[in-house]
Every structure is written in structure tokens, then in C-alpha cells.
Image (cartoon, rainbow over all chains, first blue to last red; front, side):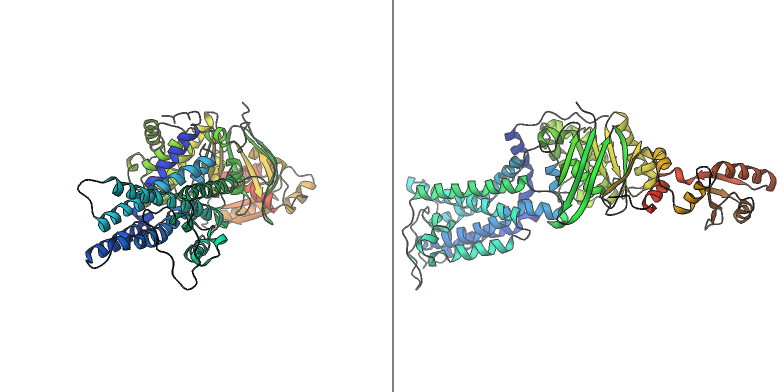
Amino acid sequence: MDAMPAPSPAPFVRQVGAVFRIEVSRIMRPRHSLPAFLLAALPVGVAAAVSAHVTLDRGGAFPAVFYNLLLGVTVFFGCAFIFTKLFRAEILERTLHYYLLAPIRREALLLGKYAAGVVVSWALFGGATVVACVLLFGLPATLPWEWTASLLRDLGTTLLACVAYGAVFLLFGLLFANPILPVAGLLAWEGLHFLLPPTLQAFSVRYYLGALTSVPLPVPDGPFAILVRSPQPWVSVLTLLALTVVGLALGAWRLRRLEVRYTDD
Amino acid sequence: MNAEIRLDDVSKFYGEVMGVNGITATLEPGVTGLVGPNGAGKSTLMSLIAGLVRPSRGRIDVLGRSAEHPRLFAGDVGYCAQYDAFPPGISARQFMAGSLRLYGYTAREAEEGATIALERVGLGDAADRRIDVYSKGMRQALKVARAIGHGPRVLLLDEPLNGLDPQARAEATALFRAFADDGAHVLISSHILHEVDAVSDRVVFLDGGYLVASGNVAEIRDEAPMDAALAADAAHGQTRPARVSIRCDRGAHVASRLFALDAATEVRLHDDGGGLSVRTSDADAFFLTLGQLVCSDGVRIEGVTPVDASVEAVYADLVSAPAPER
């Protein structure tokens, strides 16, 4: 009974697909991603509490729930949890060599893992977006175009947040043995970006995400807040996609040079 | 296609720490034992050949290919690493099938290949159990299955016999032998030296990151430096010295008679009282004397084993010899 001879190497897309399938099932395991599941439930719970409170302005609560809670907390920490673990967890578990021994390009490995992270995070946090919208605005008997367009726009914003944060956190997981510190640094930067001078505010993911929400965000009214004009939506989309490409390119560069020597990782 | 593994002046440094240095060797198909103490550089050399780390200096060709091109290289190489680690929460079949998909097999082929590989290492009945509940021996067998699943022509096995019970070890060594007999390269590192000895066609001795010797065990033994006492005997015109283990009754009597007849330079009685180990400066004269003892003194001998034909003895000679000029 002999092993089957190895077929000729799979094309790049099939390599990405093979990695993607393995990674989706890995990320979806509750033991692996329980904190991300809990984070997805957080805005849903808050939206449910707001909708149950008859005196609150549901429409006015949406920007806070969507922008501050869902994008600022759930997506940020959820993506940090999912994407930094894509490589770092395998290095800590000493299983990364199984991938590196396979006849796949490292770029395919990176893209397969990244795509799995994006799909799972968007499924979780996009689902949370939909449920939060329905809880706050109700589900009309017939879906009017305006309602549907707003929901699609917020889903798109959530997707872009997962895409951009995902690329950044994946890079953190490859570059740093302990990604918690850079994640904390980014959190501080993102959380305080409205205090930064206008030029520096442009170096923030939240600055661009804020321009994409379906409901205009309230103007920051803190004593130290610095008001800047929101970018055009197309500028936001292109900038976030550019950030993603840069993050993935740096990740691929790092992965190509990665040597498996777990003791020092 | 080139059928050799070539290492050309290969060195690997981790910062200021040396992994291996200046390794030059050509490995033919067959079973090659990789022998050396902890820190000798065995795992580093395996990782270099597998392409998991890059040499700081030198060049490695595996069947004429370089690890810089993993799509062509990795299909020929199977590696059983020393790390006892698997992705959590999945069964052996899922692990194997997922791995084989990475090699370009279709889903159906991967399932079939997983079944074949798992049955070859004796895990057919446990294929659908989660790896998390496997015993150490089963996990070791699964690593071997992962290494052989895609039918590689170069099999790199880092301590593959660890944790296996005697029967599993015998089956594993038979499996490695079968691979080699089919024309594959099988490179085995192990601390269980007598099992390396039993299965290997040749050995590579490493010590402190340097290649000390390589080739057939008997050839190395003949060329190996002797320890000082035996070297002195040899210098006085004696024939090649030898060490022999004798299992017999009346070991103390045999020892005294061997000394009286000047047939031994050193004797150590076995702790169980069932024999003795003898070092002699003239193997031919020693065996002649031993035969006379059996006839004249009625000593009952259960077995005589030349110790220094083994990997252990050659290895002991090599690492106790003065360090070569480096």
C-alpha cells in the first residue's frame, strides 16, 4: 500500500483556497475565537437594551452604537484577536512548520490566512451590524431602498474596517513576538485621534471609517477636540485599501524571511 | 535528475550562536543515521535540509533542487520534526487531509491519501479521533504519517522513535527501511543509537556543530582515532585493538585468566554478574585465548559481542578523540 505520488504543484489560487479552508475551520472553533464571538454580541446587547428603553432616541443612539462601540471596540479588538493570532498562535503552538513544509508560496499562505480572517470577522461583525440596525430601527414590512442602502453602506463600512484593521494586525502578529503592545499603542492612537492636529488625524483608520457611516457622526464637542473636515467617501475607501495593500506587502516580505526556530519566537 | 543530497560548506549561525559550521557531505539514497549529542547540530542540519531555515553560508541541493523554490522542492521532501505539536481540536484524518490539500491533491485524493498514510503507521482505527486525546506514541506516529503522506523521495526524521513502544519502533524502522529500499533518502536522527545502527546504511557523526565523520560504520571505525591507551598498544606493533562483551558464567575467573595470559588490557565485570567487558590490544590473540579458556577451564559462554563495531562505540571513540583542527 503505497502513498499516492504528489501531484504537480497547485496553481496559486488553489494554494490560497487550500489555506483558506483550513483557516476558516480553525478560526471558527469556539476555543480559538470565543472572545471574538463575545465581542460581536456586545453591540447587539447594547442595541437591544436601547431599543427596550422607550424614552431613548434610537436613531440618535445608532452612531454611538455603530461607530464607537461596533467599529471602535468590537471590530478593533475582534480583529486584533483574530488577525494577530493567524501566525503568532501557530508559532506559539509550534505548528507553523506544517505550512512552511508544503509546496505553497508564502504569499499564498499569507493571503489564504488573511482572507479567512476577513471572511470570519466580517461574518461575525457584519452580522452584529445587521442585528444592531434591526434592533434600533426595526425591520420594515417591505424593505425601502433607503433603509436597505443604509444597511448595505454600514455593512460595507464594517467590511472595510475588517479589511484594514486585519491587514495591520496580521502584520503586528508577524513582526512582534508580543503583539499586545503595538495593539495597545494603536488603540491609544485611534481612541485619541480626534485630539490630534488635522494632519495627524489623517493617519488614523477611524478617521476614514467615520466618513463612511450611513448616519452622520455627531461633532466632537470636548474641550480639546480639533474639528477637521471628513474626507470624501471615495478617498476613505481608497486610503483604507491602500493601507491594506501596504500591510499585506510588508507581511509578505516578513513571511518570506521567516525561519522556523520556535525557541526564539 | 540529481539523486543526491549535497551540502557544500554549510554553516548556520543564530546571532553569535553556532548551529552547524562548514558541513560538506554528499548523501546517497538509503538510510543515513545522524548521530550526535544534544547541541551537536542534528536538528539544525535537518531544518536546513528541509528548507525551514536558510544557511548563513554554503549551499544545499536536495535532488538538484533548492528550498528557495518551495513549490518544486517541498513535494520531494517529508519532514518529521521533533516538535510534538498539532493544530488543536481536529482529528488525525482532518489534519492529514488538510495537509495533503496543500500539496495539490483534490479533496477526494486527500481523503484517500490520509487513509493510506494513517494505516501505514498503524493509526487507521484511530483516524477519526481528536489528536488532542492521542498518546505520545500515537502523536509520534502521526508525525511520521504527515511526513510520508505525499510520497516524498527524501524523508527527514528528527527523533522519530521517541515515545514509541518496542513493537511500534520495530514497525517504524521497517517502514523507513522500505522507503529506502524503494530508492528514497531516509535521514534519521536518534538518541537510540543501536536502532540507528540497525537500520542505517551509513552514519553522519556530528559534534559541537561540526561534522566529525560520515560513511559506513565499519569504515569509520577503521579510520577513527583511538583512545590514548589503545593507541599506545597499537603503536607497539599490536594489531587493531578491540572491545568485546562476553556473557558467561564465572566472569571473575575469566577476567583473571585473561590478564594472566596477557590477552586483555582492561576488564569490567557486568553489574549483573553474568559476564564482562574486555578491552584488548590484539583481537586475534584474544579470541584464540578465549577459545582455549572454554576448552581448558570449562567456562560456559552464552554470547560474545564485538562492542566497537557498533555506532555507540565508534561514536564514543570519535567524541573522546582530540578535537580536529578547525
